[in-house]
Length: 198
Image 1 (tube, helix red, strand yellow):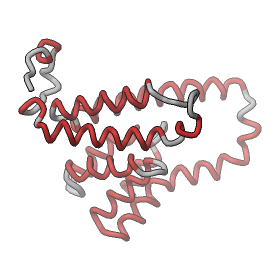
Image 2: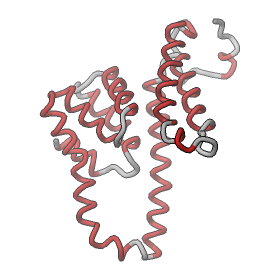
Image 3: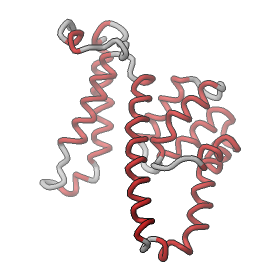
């Protein structure tokens, strides 16, 4: 509980920001394996709701159903306490100009933290060319092919559709045994891409 409470109290910017810290803390301490961590992350990403629900998965893997409730309460607790404590003052404070500037700066910092989290997760989760191709395919699919103008009702389903297509694409590339080996992202250069044979 205290570990998750500490995590919840130092997070700003959403669940993606906490992922590298969670990865280090729960894998290095032996709560879950790295494989279980990324499988749970993929599962939580495919389901509706906040990413903080990932804490329930981690708690359940470590201590079963009671662990799921304890981890969830620990991670959500600080944010709930802060919201309830700050809510009475919100209407007054949000009109103050220096506070608006402060929030703009904090939001920009949170975006930087999400980008840093993505880079750190890339190093751990992307191990083959198939993983890398799936990452770029799914990202491009969701970013550049949003049908919100042409089909507004389909737009609400676009992220789940992207997850399904990304999963199928990754499955097909893995089944083909794309690249015949491991990808060392620290040693990767553009020249390596020209030497791939299928």
